[in-house]
Image (cartoon, rainbow, N blue to C red; front, side, top):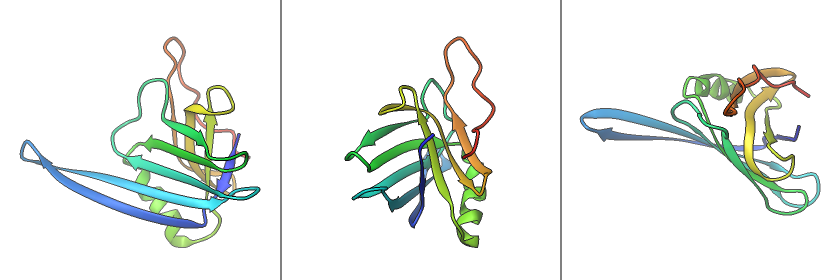
Length: 135
Protein backbone atom coordinates (compact mmCIF):
# COMPACT_ATOMS: atom_id res chain seq x y z
CA UNK A 1 0.00 0.00 0.00
CA UNK A 2 1.57 3.34 -1.04
CA UNK A 3 2.58 5.80 1.69
CA UNK A 4 4.12 9.24 1.68
CA UNK A 5 5.45 11.27 4.60
CA UNK A 6 3.97 14.74 5.13
CA UNK A 7 6.50 17.59 5.14
CA UNK A 8 4.23 20.63 4.63
CA UNK A 9 0.59 21.15 5.64
CA UNK A 10 -2.02 23.84 5.01
CA UNK A 11 -5.45 23.71 6.66
CA UNK A 12 -8.56 25.72 5.85
CA UNK A 13 -12.01 26.11 7.33
CA UNK A 14 -14.82 27.35 5.09
CA UNK A 15 -18.07 28.43 6.74
CA UNK A 16 -21.25 29.05 4.81
CA UNK A 17 -24.88 29.46 5.72
CA UNK A 18 -27.33 27.17 3.94
CA UNK A 19 -31.04 27.53 4.58
CA UNK A 20 -30.27 29.41 7.81
CA UNK A 21 -27.87 26.73 9.12
CA UNK A 22 -24.11 27.29 9.43
CA UNK A 23 -22.07 24.58 7.66
CA UNK A 24 -18.30 24.09 8.05
CA UNK A 25 -15.97 22.34 5.64
CA UNK A 26 -12.41 21.61 6.73
CA UNK A 27 -9.70 21.00 4.16
CA UNK A 28 -6.15 19.75 4.69
CA UNK A 29 -3.53 20.04 1.96
CA UNK A 30 -0.34 18.03 2.51
CA UNK A 31 2.90 17.74 0.57
CA UNK A 32 5.84 15.37 0.82
CA UNK A 33 8.90 14.55 -1.22
CA UNK A 34 8.44 11.83 -3.83
CA UNK A 35 10.87 8.89 -3.96
CA UNK A 36 12.47 10.28 -7.14
CA UNK A 37 11.97 13.82 -8.35
CA UNK A 38 8.81 15.76 -7.65
CA UNK A 39 6.33 16.24 -4.85
CA UNK A 40 3.50 14.05 -3.60
CA UNK A 41 0.35 15.98 -2.74
CA UNK A 42 -2.88 15.23 -0.91
CA UNK A 43 -6.02 17.34 -0.61
CA UNK A 44 -8.36 15.88 2.01
CA UNK A 45 -11.83 17.26 2.68
CA UNK A 46 -13.36 16.51 6.09
CA UNK A 47 -17.02 16.92 5.19
CA UNK A 48 -19.70 14.28 5.41
CA UNK A 49 -19.28 10.55 5.52
CA UNK A 50 -17.55 9.12 2.45
CA UNK A 51 -19.93 6.87 0.63
CA UNK A 52 -20.11 4.79 -2.44
CA UNK A 53 -17.34 2.72 -3.92
CA UNK A 54 -14.56 5.34 -3.76
CA UNK A 55 -13.28 7.76 -1.12
CA UNK A 56 -11.12 9.76 -3.50
CA UNK A 57 -9.05 9.76 -6.61
CA UNK A 58 -5.34 9.36 -7.44
CA UNK A 59 -3.51 11.07 -10.28
CA UNK A 60 0.03 10.03 -11.16
CA UNK A 61 1.98 13.25 -11.83
CA UNK A 62 5.15 11.41 -12.90
CA UNK A 63 6.65 7.96 -12.45
CA UNK A 64 7.24 8.75 -8.76
CA UNK A 65 4.96 11.68 -7.74
CA UNK A 66 1.20 11.45 -7.10
CA UNK A 67 -1.70 13.71 -6.18
CA UNK A 68 -4.42 12.26 -3.94
CA UNK A 69 -7.81 13.97 -3.52
CA UNK A 70 -10.28 12.45 -1.08
CA UNK A 71 -12.81 12.69 1.73
CA UNK A 72 -12.65 11.65 5.37
CA UNK A 73 -15.35 11.79 8.06
CA UNK A 74 -15.50 15.21 9.78
CA UNK A 75 -14.94 13.65 13.22
CA UNK A 76 -11.47 12.47 12.15
CA UNK A 77 -10.24 16.04 11.58
CA UNK A 78 -9.53 16.60 15.29
CA UNK A 79 -7.28 13.51 15.56
CA UNK A 80 -5.32 14.48 12.44
CA UNK A 81 -4.99 18.13 13.54
CA UNK A 82 -3.75 17.12 17.01
CA UNK A 83 -1.22 14.71 15.47
CA UNK A 84 0.08 17.52 13.25
CA UNK A 85 0.36 19.86 16.24
CA UNK A 86 2.46 17.39 18.26
CA UNK A 87 4.95 17.01 15.40
CA UNK A 88 6.69 13.86 14.31
CA UNK A 89 6.32 11.75 11.22
CA UNK A 90 2.76 11.66 9.87
CA UNK A 91 1.97 9.78 6.67
CA UNK A 92 -0.79 9.65 4.06
CA UNK A 93 -1.74 6.06 3.16
CA UNK A 94 -3.92 5.13 0.20
CA UNK A 95 -5.02 2.16 -1.87
CA UNK A 96 -6.49 2.23 -5.36
CA UNK A 97 -8.88 -0.27 -6.89
CA UNK A 98 -6.41 -1.33 -9.56
CA UNK A 99 -3.12 -0.67 -7.76
CA UNK A 100 -2.08 2.08 -10.17
CA UNK A 101 -4.33 5.11 -10.65
CA UNK A 102 -7.97 6.04 -10.47
CA UNK A 103 -10.48 5.68 -7.65
CA UNK A 104 -9.24 5.24 -4.09
CA UNK A 105 -10.61 2.29 -2.20
CA UNK A 106 -8.99 3.40 1.09
CA UNK A 107 -7.45 6.61 2.38
CA UNK A 108 -6.00 7.51 5.76
CA UNK A 109 -3.40 9.11 8.00
CA UNK A 110 -1.01 7.05 10.11
CA UNK A 111 1.83 7.59 12.58
CA UNK A 112 4.19 4.79 13.66
CA UNK A 113 1.66 2.06 12.93
CA UNK A 114 -1.22 3.95 14.62
CA UNK A 115 -4.26 4.74 12.47
CA UNK A 116 -5.37 8.34 13.07
CA UNK A 117 -8.09 8.61 10.42
CA UNK A 118 -9.35 6.28 7.74
CA UNK A 119 -12.05 6.10 5.09
CA UNK A 120 -12.96 2.97 3.16
CA UNK A 121 -15.06 2.85 0.01
CA UNK A 122 -17.90 0.37 -0.06
CA UNK A 123 -18.47 -2.30 -2.65
CA UNK A 124 -21.95 -2.86 -3.93
CA UNK A 125 -22.30 -6.42 -2.59
CA UNK A 126 -19.70 -6.74 0.16
CA UNK A 127 -19.04 -4.90 3.43
CA UNK A 128 -15.96 -2.65 3.59
CA UNK A 129 -12.86 -3.85 5.47
CA UNK A 130 -12.56 -2.51 9.02
CA UNK A 131 -9.21 -0.69 8.70
CA UNK A 132 -5.82 -0.52 7.09
CA UNK A 133 -3.10 -3.03 7.65
CA UNK A 134 -0.42 -0.47 8.50
CA UNK A 135 3.07 -0.61 7.02
